[in-house]
Length: 362
Image 1 (cartoon, rainbow, N blue to C red):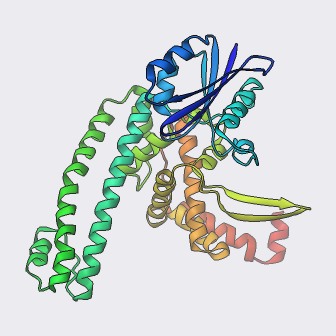
Image 2: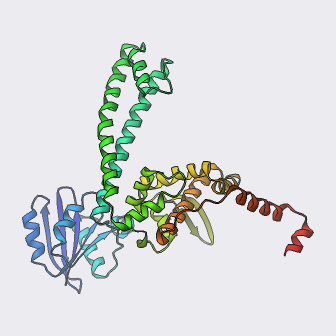
Image 3: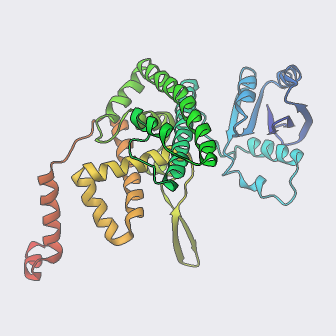
């Protein structure tokens, strides 16, 4: 068995091949354009296992090597820190270090979604990018009009756009506004196209994905956009051992530094997809506004830790709920307002009631 460490760059790859005794057998450097030479080199190594760090440009190499490799390991870049923080760091040493860790079965693996989730994720992220650009354009236009006291709530409706065309602006402001308006109009078409593609993608979903979508839609305040984000970014919930690991993957767990018996709790790690984390935080805001039980829990925590931490904690709690729902395929159940009020009243009675009453209850 050969163990191959690969250091992938935009224009080149550096390869180190070891045997089971971790003896270096080959070192090679290829241009990324040398597809045929790369294919022939790896075909001659069979049987082999290879490791490459998870990057934005690693997908093409994985697809190229999978037909001939016994296994391709995608290394988690954040967890393979011993190479990244080495004092002697070169491409050759990086490749050799990965090969040695692979031979020792010590590579921290990154998750690699299957083709359908990968396509879904690309569409969802592109739609989010387009929406972000449109929002930025609208914000800039509102800023210019605000300086002229000409902004209005319905600025981007038909009536508002007519107002924008007729409003008196300085020549400099008009030069700024017109390209922004044209850019916003140009981006609406692609955004609508991505939305239609995602609707079609959902209609073609396999049974397991369709059931997951149906379960997620039962949560109040969770619409199709949030469902798409959760389904594409979370993938198969079974890949997480428990809800806490799912929360960690979304970057919603607090970091902790402990030394000498003293521990300091930091902010959340913000690891993983910002889109996934942002969707959960936005959903947490909606649940607090719409759900009595979520609002009660958020208000209690807000008094102790502040509003921002209460909402982030709500997002983490929502991730735990989502994980449990998807594992058991159980729809969301709304707790009546009266039940929440009753529980809260009982809790307050336990904490503020007469001491003798509390003693009796014990």
